[in-house]
Length: 75
Image 1 (cartoon, one colour):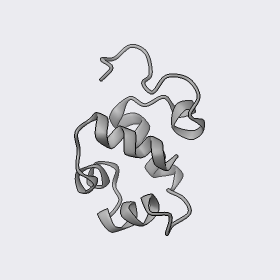
Image 2 (cartoon, one colour):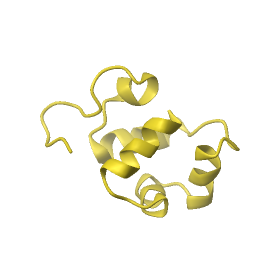
Image 3 (tube, one colour):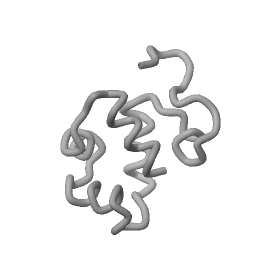
């Protein structure tokens, strides 16, 4: 999932700090996760990613399917 979160950050042209704030996590917490120093992100934060960025939950969790849910503008 780390690679897919990085892809979301790049797709929306965000800094890690902006992305972290948008999903309700500290920038240090996000950095630890992306660097492999933390094993997971809470399900609540995953839900925030899905809702805020219209992300397909299957894609986010498994890498399968399309990045975005249908019905909204895709980037």
